[in-house]
Length: 311
Image (cartoon, rainbow, N blue to C red):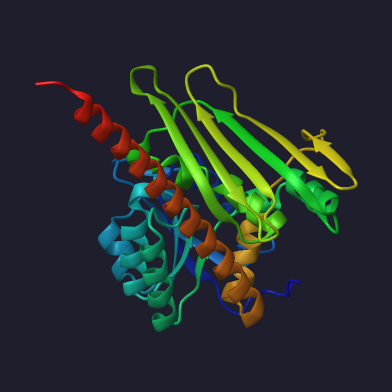
């Protein structure tokens, strides 16, 4: 896969945002991996004044955008800022790797992809959930089987919607699992229950496969809820209830970087890139449809509540 000889050139990289994902990206860029040999970490961008992190220098956003040394941006900031950063770096002629979700709007994602194509730059949305051992196991289990019905429940601690988006966007990795396993899906219905004073929310989404098989996706977040995934898939030939222990996920962000570098080097076919883009846009479209559905139901409730009020 890799030309292990010394690369003819290295792409200069800045990492935007140094939270959990950004810190892992910096670590992988600094370590001697096959894909890192094609990349040269120039610095990081943060809204906070941090100076240096492990000898990596902080640089301003303006310098990152204008420097000819910087050819690649890793966008690892909170989701609400992704769209703006992607647009700025693409307009500055840089390749972009962004943590999912790339945007909190399907239309914005389409616009950014068009911009990347106009500029002749790689726009790559990270999906480490597809590089996990659990997903590899599921993919093998599901192949060739006729689904009757299924469900996927994810629980975790609270997440700020203002920073990370509506639950269908912040939880888009679960939606990506379902689409990658069972093909494109249709939205049947969705509900969002919220107790903001308790920081608790539960989103229940009813989906349908192209063969009209029902899939239920639930995201529940609140204090005290452990990060966990529960699944149940029923096939004509048997059932899969919950995930066995299939091993530790090692270096999933590095595996994602490997894919990105292959794109930079032109090692992906147009067919592969088109299929990936189609899947990503379908998931973002579904997330937006779920958001619209939940908001319309909320408005209906509020309207009904208002109309019942007496003088």
